[in-house]
Length: 88
Image 1 (cartoon, rainbow, N blue to C red):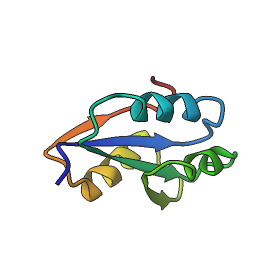
Image 2: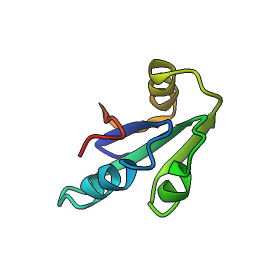
Image 3: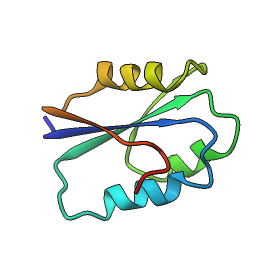
Image 4: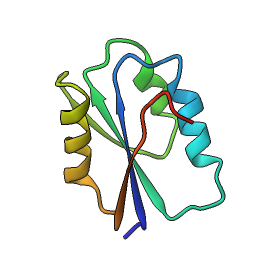
């Protein structure tokens, strides 16, 4: 079981998601899982996400809060971290 589950909702963020995911995977701490919730994105965000070792959950667009809650339901970590897709 990972120590942390990092939940990242994705909706039309192709300009930002690579920098976000790079910052997560470039850290030295490795005991985590990343859950990307595709909230019905209409751009190429998921093409970028597929290059990373993440768990992808796809749903129709329901908004940020629902996407986060969807990620929480699938999280296996002892702790949960919410990260916006434009954060790094």
